[in-house]
Length: 517
Image (tube, rainbow, N blue to C red; front, side):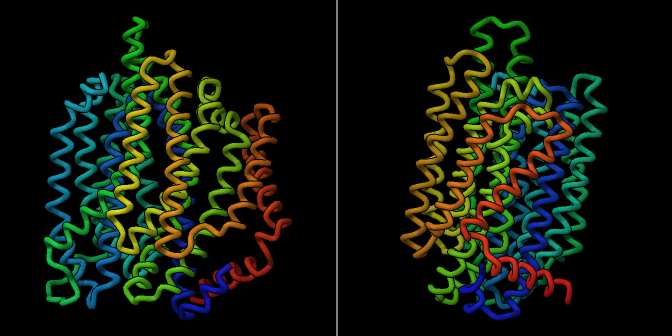
């Protein structure tokens, strides 16, 4: 798997990358598992309509939160990786990020009433204000994670991810239950989120430190660094708008349509369908979430190779990194596309499964393209082409927003609006993925290996077609069904010789090196 990669970088880098990849991948898998537990528990704690209302809040706050986390992590990671003194670089970055976090948090709090009005959901105003506290905490936390990433301290980074995922889940669900009896479940979950974000910050400071004052000629000025961060954040904002634009506008369209039809308990009914769509997103986003672990390791290594003017090293890293990412994405999406109704029923119950199965099939296809597009955007960013990445993502987000609003507003209330939104989003994402792939290939000289793409695509298509003939599995059998699909996927790649004994040997060597440390 890493034959060319091994020939291009030192044994020490191989070991660190392998250990880091395992640590971050393990943390990401833990995060995904906790997310599976968290979301159904939130739905059970505050009801489907409360879950939908919370989803409206998160469709806004998660955009800015993810931009701050991704942009700051990548920006500080690159700053630290390229610096002569990483502690001076961290202090330099914190002088920019802490005031920036305050400004962004204040902006979200001030915008909350207008967002609630646009959504025709005044009850989400206060939860949005609480999420402004989360945004400030994230703005201080993410530069510390970026410093760990730039230093190659992936195990510490992964440990913080695991702790935060656990604490956040416990507090969100607990606070949601406490306030649900008073009709304020969504507010309770956001308060729990804010407490967790504030709690993890001192732990991150202990792991990463606050840096030290000093002068490093390799560092840009604060103004130049802020310009670089804005460029990175702009590309990340486009990506996160793509993730949430459909849900945000779907919520508005559902509310307006419910009022048009004079539906009894219009807000509650609209929120229930928003909750169903959010449930579909939970599974559809899995490929992207898993692929993020690859980008966390790939980004600093690409940045270093690019800084060293090593085009062959960049090409090798892109080829190997995208191959691993594609195989991982194929594994997850095969399970989702083969068992959409069973997965929804397992996590959320038969009501959500009945209303969301077809939507999940369509949305998972689009989000697979989005996951690979996100990998392409990360590659462009790491090679200093943030502006181009930003343009591609923003154009895609604009098309999703315009088309969802135009084509979903007057569709039949409920399931038809969900289907329309997922179809529009998937169509735009497929086109955007093709454009992004061609762009990366021209700049980096490599992207997804075509033979790997063909083998993975054929396997996913085969398992998806089989899934159409499978009945809805009992809840107890769903994990075994998912395991069977995963084993079938791996077996297919082995039979087509996409996975070979060399891959197993390399994985075994990485594990052995990790144990020897």
